Length: 306
Image (cartoon, rainbow, N blue to C red; front, top):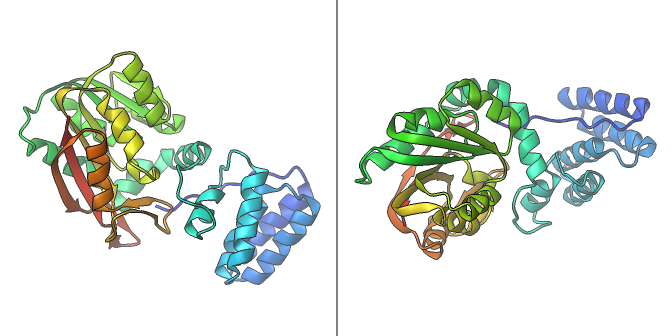
């Protein structure tokens, strides 16, 4: 499932019209013509973030890496919220170090996905993270009845529905209000909260909340370093409780940003982050939770105990 293009109007009708013409030319394969139209639009509206971002994409396709970097920088600078995710393209192109994804980008991305998310994920991408996590928790040896369960990045609630029969109290948190609206329709959660997961965990720790199982299904792909989130999760786990999560992975040890704009975490990075958080690894198994363009995406299913 690829990020959906967004358009932040420039305020200049002629510039906006040229942007739309450029999109049409690009769809027809005339990349150079589309880039020329975007340049014209930017002469009329120099702070047109969507045009800068689209120009960055076109320049990269045309083989102009430095020009693409310059355009993506302009896109980021002219939209301080970075709703297009220009910083991620700068990271991917080696112009910025790996960093957390802009929250406004993630929120915008998933607000756009929400109406068709379940069908696209389960039918189009063969998504099965909830099923694999359930199986991993079952084989971890803990009784399959949890007093309280926290679903990090709960999205539309697919993992929550799978685990609902095994808990008394189910809490979900997500950055996207549109995804949370979809989750509410499933009537699986006792509490749903809007927020960034690390901050939410910090607030829960201050409130002395404790959970017997924490889930993160298809969430940590949007974080670079897992150290902070695992440390924050460990702080709200009840004694001898579990955390179970999925990540995308690669053959190296560290963290890379894939072309899909999702982070892939090496097994060594996962093991080190668990140890730094004071969590004991129960299992770390290779698995694929989804496909991308018909190809299985390599991943890991991880269960750990505090």
